[in-house]
Length: 195
Image (cartoon, rainbow, N blue to C red; front, side, top):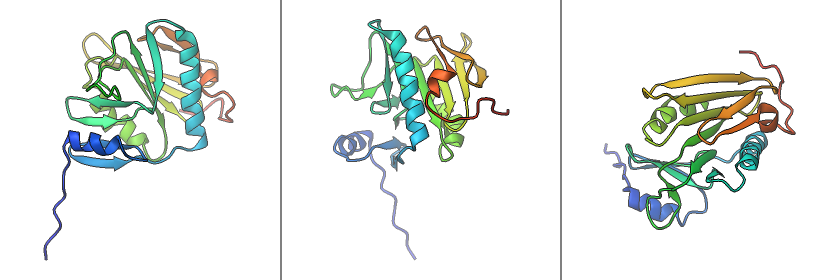
């Protein structure tokens, strides 16, 4: 009995396919991973966060972007679409297509049942290899709960946890402060989630 060998793609082959694809996919170590669609809560949390952050950035040097822009973790060749991206000043892209960012300051992921373990574990470890990254923010979609991970000068990550709608999340990489009420606007989430 023989098995069919798995065909691995090069990053260039992935990008050529991805740029023509109808649906987004991530790429790591030669393999393509289809991305699932997001639910109502996930989309609202992502969009609310982007709007709240964007409202504070105005015409300054920083921008907030959502999951339509791909980010590359160059150290391991991971191509992924974070739910939120903050970038300032001189953006660096992989090529002249300007669709693969190399230097995010802050990455945000909205947690779902299917991605939470990966977002907290392997993806966080991968993102940590991006030299420009200063913050990684995890946002629950089903309760008012946010975790902010800020890279310290020694390379360690300091995690601060926020629960309920009253706390204020400080995104130090872009000098923005937003409340959790802004993130969860128009969503029926528990206001006092339990740890």
